[in-house]
Length: 435
Image (cartoon, rainbow, N blue to C red; front, top):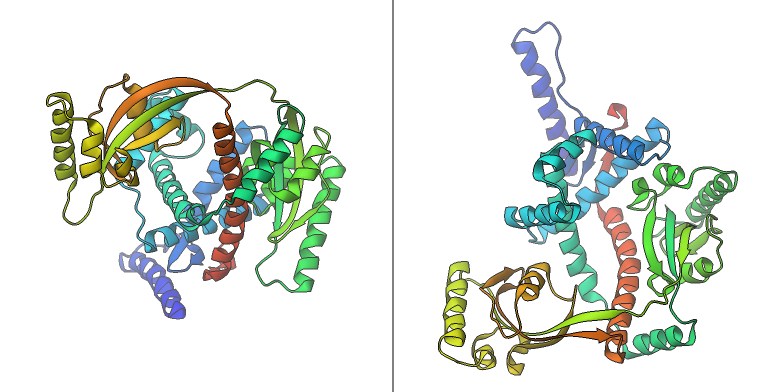
């Protein structure tokens, strides 16, 4: 089947080639060529060229020394292949990133960066990227994020012993956990690798470490040699506490000196080298703004459309505001959420604990008020704010923080293993003669 598909692709390029001859042109012009086949899709030379130019512009702006052209090109191609595999998996499993969701995401980016759409387009042009390609990348990232949430995050289990161990360690340590700014290089070991293959990867990791000890630029080495998804961003992991790091990184990070690289660390998916970019303490008490809210959720299905759900919630809103009916009573009768039995009560919510659409509406409400119908990925909501408070870090909040930290750590580890498996399962053919 795949060989037939390959022949079809080359037949397509041959038709393009022949078409110019029929028109009587002096020299045939091959418009584009395929550099890689990824399952049922392809990556073309023009696509790769555009992506390489965009990466080069970004690295120059960030003053990152460029690796050799062929090395950079290979890194970019590998990242494009992995992205295409994940997007294919997302689409084939029924996930979608609608135009509305993409627009909302871009709007949030504009708001966060405090720029206009025209300024964004100019910035993209300066980086060698047009707006349409940027929009397509946003769509791809939304699909990949949705896929990760469904395939990885939804499967993460956090036990009571996980939380107890985290809290015990956190309380027994120094007041206020340290934060680490780390960068990371990964030499990936394929699933089912032989002993010789593992040894070969270990030798590569040792060679990378030797270069770093000789003064090589970590970000440049990451861009040229790392198999991590963020290799072209210098391998940065961002600021993290020790408890947010994978187990094999924790002891190493705690004993590292700022600016230094770690020894080669081995995990199930390969060999790692860390660099401690910076370190800071965290002794400031945290005051958390919390909102106690209720909601009525109407999920969409074959029977209930968008408009019907919205109209029903407007009717329920009028019954609360004009008819004096208790919000909780209507939530018990009509809400599709598990909170219905509690009158729609969601308890105390902190920032980031609900989806953005829900949080924006909730934050904008005064105490006692009821929102207009709000749409989120879960359906349509009617929200009532019961009360608000500023809460110091309580035992309940510490448990929630522990759950978030543990979930993130487990998710990171599982995701790296999962994407390695997805790549190993994919059909990938390199057409080296056209690279």
